[in-house]
Image (tube, rainbow, N blue to C red; front, side):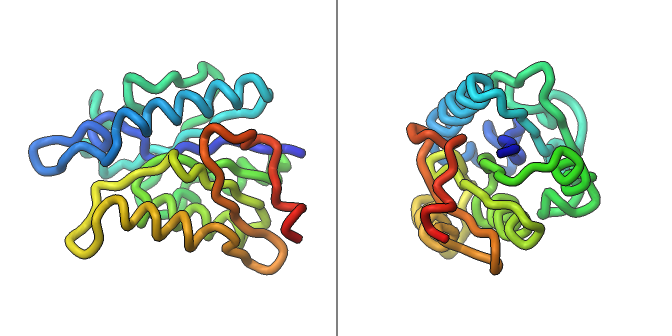
Length: 185
């Protein structure tokens, strides 16, 4: 089975914050879990793809780059996006289809925006998805706490389906590159 690790918006300024925005919730845990899953992907010979948001740090400088504490594989592919959805106008979908990917493991920021839209769009486009439940985070909002947003999305997206393809939520300690989707079909 062809699979990929997709890490969304794990950028320096989004994770660390700036004068206008706070630090992402559970920053150290997020970075640690991303690095743990990158290492698992390396051992499983699974490619890593990063998506960066052009709105972060106005799309330039160190703040725009993937966080300096994340162990970016030298062969990782990087796409830049200008919309919430990582598949919109980036070439990501074409790349995944050209590589005949079937399973996408997703991590990154922000839960209720880019992570949610990526999971849903991937299932619509014929991929099974594993969302790393302890591998995504958010800055929060005025309605729900960061913990509530993460818990809500982990609950909502576990078992989310679009006919033939769906998402499961598993934690970073699990064998993420041994998907469990077929046991639910």
